Image (cartoon, rainbow, N blue to C red; front, side, top):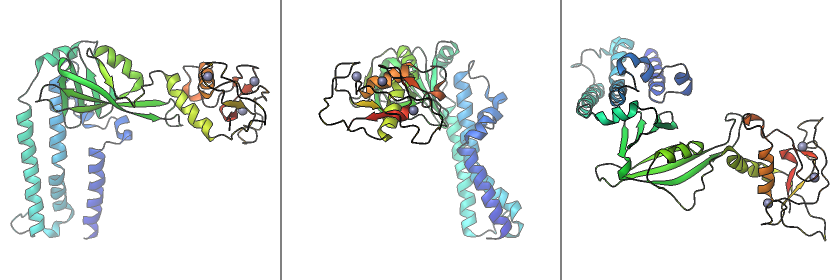
Length: 342
Ligand SMILES: [Zn+2]
Ligand SMILES: [Zn+2]
Ligand SMILES: [Zn+2]
């Protein structure tokens, strides 16, 4: 491959990847097909189905034009190959050209066929305010009074609520981290319709949106036995708290000392001891933490709840770094000072 050919191929590959897997930076700058062609796509609120039919059609047409675009670009990038003259080009280029054209034609057929179906009643419902819109970019979930829809790049999945069985099949926990200021739990729900023409599909939801979703959705939602849904930020935080404490040093109980039941719940033995460890860890030299001399009195869950209840609910980014008084003696401690009993 010559230099000009190679650099065009590289540049085109990057362009194609950015176009198909729109990076978050592009989304933030408004460089999405939906934004660039918004005047032609029309309003999503007024003509929901038209908007998304046009959007998916346009996306299919643009994406399927990429190979053809590469061929045409190559005609300019490498005039010596004389690709413009289709009768004289080498066999592999000719095959590529015909495949590209066929892909484009097939997309047109698909788009024309699909745009024949318009569901006016979804449009009407979509104009109402009390729909629930949730999900992640690229896989939005919309629940109206009688429909449940999932809108992706190439396809709209829809099912009538009254025909649906919905099951929570999986939950994934994302811990507190510098990139995500609050802990999140993503739930996967499987939507199955009793109508055989409707293919089952899965939707992803943030667990804090689950309550809204469940209220809008009239049928009962089943939960697989191994899935626990955390609906509040505090509940979600307990998972992060537990994971963080497990990293800390353990505390060995002095010989002869008995473990008492947890003071908070009286259900399980106490399992934590507060030791002023954050200073030795070298996080802050001037730590505000104080030594707690209490014997182990709390289980990890109760201490985590206590810790969460002392946090500013609006400032999730400070939760992991904040200091909280010991529930018994009020000596301040931080998350690094919580030790599990060995
Ligand atoms: Zn307890
Ligand atoms: Zn104490
Ligand atoms: Zn500390």
